[in-house]
Length: 130
Image (cartoon, rainbow, N blue to C red; front, side):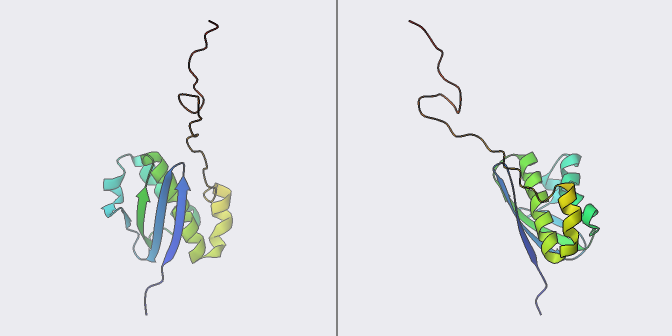
């Protein structure tokens, strides 16, 4: 019989993370790299692993994730969101704790589109009376 897998898609700003949880020892692989190799800053590594601590699932799942778009902070937030969603699919009892921590809310802040007649989203050329 095939191993049970749980999928979750996380998004933050312009980053998208496709996360797969497989029962295992707790290894985290992001874009075919280990967690410590992919994220240099310790705070980002902790941010990615926080859903496991709140749900009480440390060392129970291996994470295989593909992350695209945005910067490293946005990618870490997208991973956290995707892991949280996948954890809920594994056990619905984890939902209240993850919801209270705010890990199930999608951070929708994105870059505003450029409007015609302007240089950027809101920046206009300098006004001159004459």
